[in-house]
Image 1: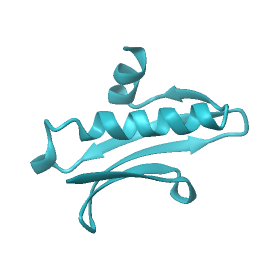
Image 2 (image 1 turned 90 degrees about the vertical axis):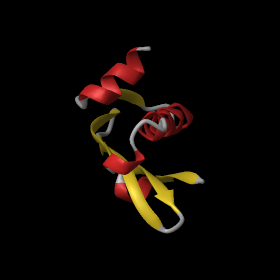
Image 3 (image 1 turned 45 degrees about the vertical axis):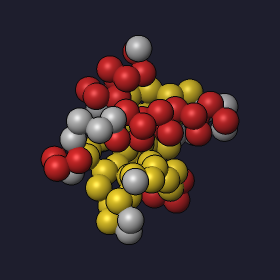
Image 4 (image 1 turned 180 degrees about the vertical axis):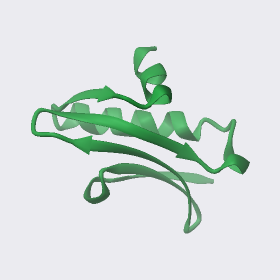
Length: 82
């Protein structure tokens, strides 16, 4: 079972298979917004919706903190536009 953890101290959401990190969605925290700039999932974990879940996790946290969210990462841009 893949667990998605929001790690604000590292400006990212991360995916774990047990204790193994298998993906990240990283963002730059600016005073008025967060910018998702990198999303990565280990190739053997592709196709499971992990990257989407990490982007959604960052999106949810930004909403909770009332911070505007943008993306320069092509994948995050796609997810946020849906």
